[in-house]
Length: 400
Ligand code: SF4
Image (cartoon, rainbow, N blue to C red; front, top):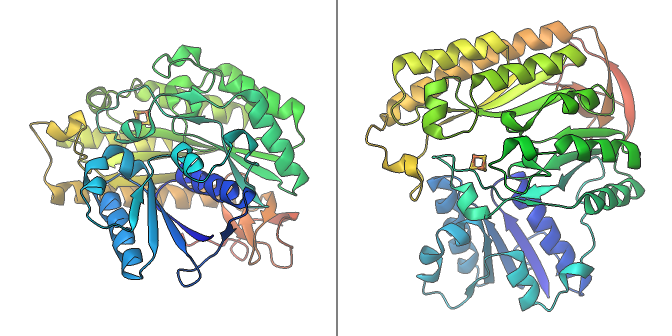
């Protein structure tokens, strides 16, 4: 069978798609890259916002219009299964997760090879699911309970990736900082540092990055290892708000103090560390003064990059039933204000880094990322090569 996979959503979904593709190929099916050639199209759906759900259905409609058989899987089918099963199309089959797909195609999950999707920067899944109860979050409903990927499996996958020529891995998960805990609600039982220690001592991978980290899980032992130059000096914190009262209503399990502590500890061992974060603007009940607290906190920390989203209701989450929603227009205005501040902070951060020499892992097209996540030109370097570049106006490859 010739199959095509269309993926929506986050890095974890892309990793799932890579595993599904590798699994299907391992039993003789052939992955193709366009609709025309495909006999079967898989849609790996997303539900993080209402818009993502809508797009997932739109992908399915477009594909069905091409007279192709469709298998839909992923987060939207797990959270909003009803809207998928209510569809009357005979050519669409809903298989909610990879195990259902493996059963359908007689694939033994233990025999599926590790997918190597990139030979430069490879995402590696170390954890999935989450036991926390953040009041806005639909992901925890879509992804189920927190589960660690065992250390041995992570190490084997990284060793395999190194053999395939990979030089940088990005450790990824739904709530990856909770790695090692039995229940991600218990922040003190997380042992991400132990996994990092094992990766540093048992593999020769040259660069290690982390996706978004929950601040309540990260303690000093992590920063003792963060001093190692193989660990990229870039930390993305899952923050959501700079107001403690909003964080309480979000049921985040941390306050601004933990975030400030992370920035401080990271910069103590690696003074040039870039600290990035996610922010939700206009969470239900957010007052002008709470919004201002976020603005002040962002400036106080001096984040190098912010991902800012206006709050979006997701049916089935407690926040969606809040009695005091913020007008959509105001959510957007607050998001815009924060983005403008973030842009200025980014400019300041990059100016401070000018003149430094960075080791760059070259990507296709003659550019690459510094370890602290600045995009630079490295003309002439081959993809996958590590080269040294001085950051200046000519080599900077992002608009500031
Ligand atoms: S930590 Fe909160 S936001 Fe993150 S996946 Fe868990 S419940 Fe969702």
